[in-house]
Length: 211
Image 1 (tube, rainbow, N blue to C red):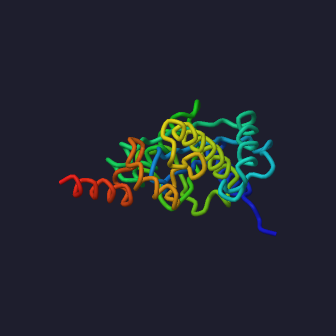
Image 2: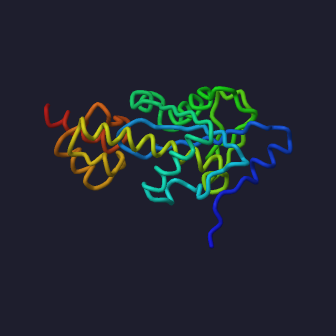
Image 3: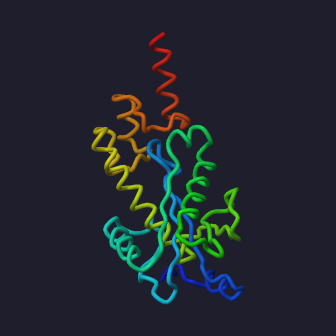
């Protein structure tokens, strides 16, 4: 049986005197369209919902149910970096910007942060640990991964209604075959990331053709 995330990282921080701990994760680095979304979640470690795990390892229905449960028993802050910011900064810096915004959105600043990945975003003034594959190791990061994914997926469903044909309601903006084919046939929307190669290539190709 594969072991899921637990609260050992949180417990270690609490032993050092950090009582209010936020897990931080982002979703949406890979898509060709849409924002990158981050979440910061402070769990009540005496009332952690059962079944928390890396959001990519569970069904949409299970994620939705857990996200609803977390709304009732945890403090959650969600934040985004826009497509314009992604193109201006690059996807890594934009992801970190979204993470910082999520942390800053918490009502009371945490004492410490557990951040998914191998880098700590700049401009954080709170003690932080970067945890590789943190959503599979820390319940707080797993919770953040779930609420961030549920939030971003809903955004992409709404954008799909405004721009039908790209399949965002199912591919969430990721470069599926049908999405890339739609880019070729329907063109680039304002929600596409122009700095990403498949989108950039189509814009460049159109420019060559029009000349």
